[in-house]
Image 1 (cartoon, rainbow, N blue to C red):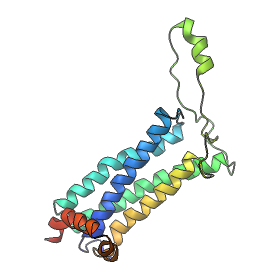
Image 2 (image 1 turned 90 degrees about the horizontal axis):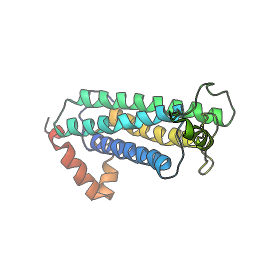
Image 3 (image 1 turned 45 degrees about the horizontal axis):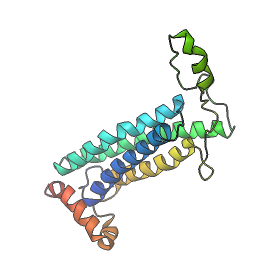
Length: 196
């Protein structure tokens, strides 16, 4: 598929799914931290920042599709999004491998701690502060740590971004026929793009 091929419902759905995926992953990571009490390590922050960046980038892709941007611009944006997501997946893979002791993790990878200037509270803070090592899984869900789940979810989003970049505008037509409401929504988003 050429990068200049027309765009349509397939690209609208890909952009929408990337935005929803980034919002879901960001909400989960913030929920595990602020509700569940799991503190992120430095590698966790790198992976989070990828998904934080994906929120406005995916929204931009939806906007430029709605405004009828040239097909090459839209498809190249999807290639860029796939690259950003692949970077996050590689960092997650590295962290998950270190957690399973397939290789060594970084020596200096822990969460940052702000020490209180008040000496009377220093001992209490030191006793309650928990340093998080990047090479130790805090929790496993269905056998995967947070880093492992990032690999799975980011790889799925990479696939969606590559579909947006290289699939034809009608590649998902069978899906839209089975789910007409989805097809109508995507047509509304990509209508200006189809006019070109």
